[in-house]
Length: 170
Image 1 (cartoon, rainbow, N blue to C red):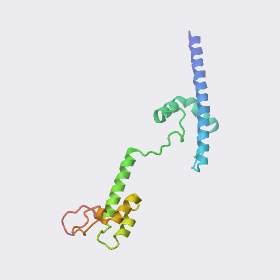
Image 2 (spheres, rainbow, N blue to C red):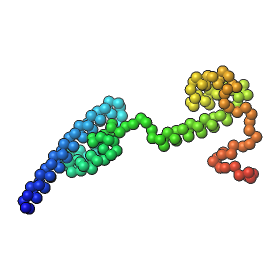
Image 3 (cartoon, rainbow, N blue to C red):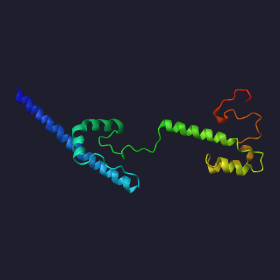
Image 4 (tube, rainbow, N blue to C red):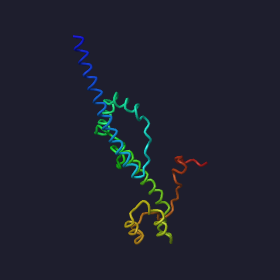
């Protein structure tokens, strides 16, 4: 009975190590292809830290963990840096970008006086990075449609120096 258990464990061990070797060589070839693509694009490619015998030992013994992590995070068993590169920012990045654009454009609105003789030049300078050239041209041709300040505000900017206005003088 003990002999049968040892034979079964030996077979399982050989299968485990065989699958680990297969994983190692498949993943290494995918990583080599990825590295070549990144080098061709002129990107920085990290040097290999655990190569040779150490890399083989890590991959052969830990292949189930690497396989599970790759499938969980990238939906592919042989994930590489080329596999999970995405040009789409996360929703938090999108929200931060939208917030930046709106706040930046709002601050620039204060700098454009529509009654100034230099209103067209001010609009070009302040709005060019925030709006399309066609929209900017429409505003510059018809100032009545353009955003900006018509008169100066009698109230100070409430958020100057990131301090809320308290109504008290200094």
